[in-house]
Image 1 (cartoon, helix red, strand yellow):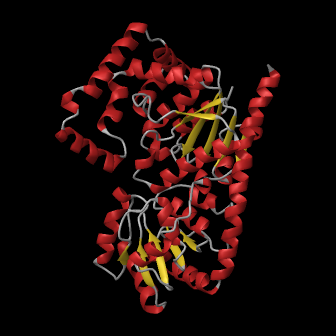
Image 2 (cartoon, helix red, strand yellow):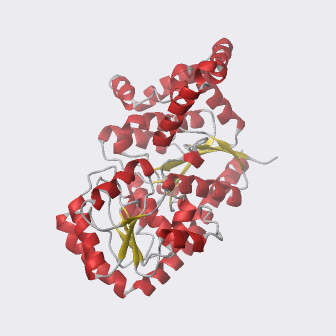
Image 3 (cartoon, helix red, strand yellow):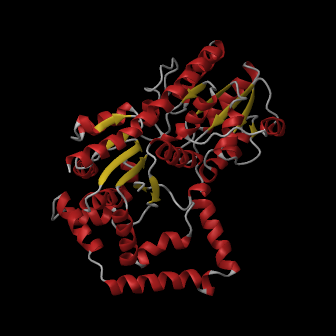
Length: 440
């Protein structure tokens, strides 16, 4: 019988409508890699199954108990459900799904607006709060039905996402308590806060294998006390996404007016943006380098306003619409180079073999630095754009124009090598499973 694997934090059922293209590509690549290299049947674990186990509750309970006691208590709460409570929860959940109050045109419009902004709808968000026991029961039954569990860590194991960190770690803990092998993949570890570090250390040390997105995260887990033999420095699953070729390339290029001499920008809009310095960079590209500058988005709700602000200060062209990652990657192939502080935009450019100037986002993270530890790339990651880094960006522009073909060759080789390594690293899960079977 075909083995089953439960993927936690896989963004199902919203993955095809995610507002962030990086998340779409990442989930696509993870599913594709698991299917091709493990051959397991995938069961979706969804996301935020226990949203009420947040950092506020954890902090309160941690003052009187150690980490294990807090998570053990939550395990007893979640596993100790009665048949009647499950039956009642299912009835109420089905009632809300079918009730005319939530199926009318007004509610559906509100639901669509919420999904467009946050990816998740109102029902998906509030049901786990309203029907805790029923949703906990469903999740536990999923775990029991599979052979092993895979946690898609992404950038969520980080101090900046600490509010839901206990809930996310609890899903891994729950699977381990139920006797399943638990593996983590596709993750950056940005943990320094002592409370978070203690929690991550306790949970991760008891899991079976960790595939990080880059070597800096492997180093972070070593500092948290995870055994080295449980760690593999791998890469982001977006490298393995479905970048299917399309016969619409020429149409896309013509529609967007992309010709030789085009430079692309993707700028994060969810943090402080130094619009004045970005405008100076764009002016330099246009007036000194003779480039036509295009602004694209990888997150429509966070980045769109960047264009409105920059348009007041300089001359640039906005890509006409919010393309999916496959189409955007095709467009990137036509740029002379890309300048971006978006992590997955860099991965799309690497796949497209388009030279990049990588810039750190305006928040503390190791993920961009870590990404370029995977590649022998001669342009260093630049700190966030501002007056003090303006000259660094101009120096990188000069270098990228003088060595464009050389950089394309470096990225072409890196893209192939990284994809191959990801496939090999994922197969390590299968080897671990076979070892456990022999042990039994």
